[in-house]
Structures are given as structure tokens and as C-alpha cells.
Image: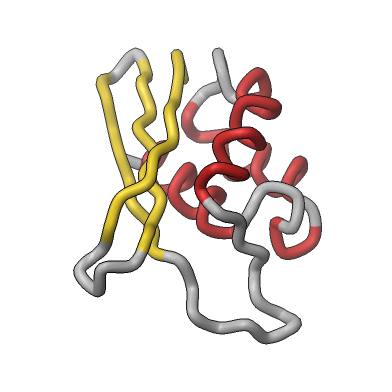
Length: 101
């Protein structure tokens, strides 16, 4: 069960900003970092800057606190919208990976 999560900015090996999510659950503390995508096609997931994603994360945090880790992807899909335009594709992927660990 998820107790809390935080989002921060990290730099990847190409010196580009990436996001990192640290998820705290009853089973421990798990993290995932996801780089920003370089594709800009109309069918690509939406990406936000880390500052914007932090604000979005605070607004949607209540959807995840107390949630079983196995249900994270269902909630991400429900609140994320088409191509995750409401929450950002990199946030959705990092959250999914952290919860799967």
C-alpha cells in the first residue's frame, strides 16, 4: 500500500533533466528515473517540466495514497487522459516503474 511519493529533478548521462519518483510503501522505498523524451510527434505522450509535474503530483497525490501498488497503472490511465496529457508521460512511466518494484 502506498504511503507517500515525491518527485524531483535529476540529470541523466547526457546531462539532460529527467524526473525521479521515490515511492514509499508498506514494503519499503522504491524509486525510478525516467528521461525526457526527444520525440515530438502528435502521437507521443505529453511531457511537462519537473516544476509543473510537482504541482500536478500534489493535486493528484490523494489518488495514490492508500492504494495497492498493483492498481497504480489503472489510476494513471484513468486520471492521465489521452496520451497522459493531464499528468505527463514521463511522470506516468516513473510512477508505474517505482510501484512495480
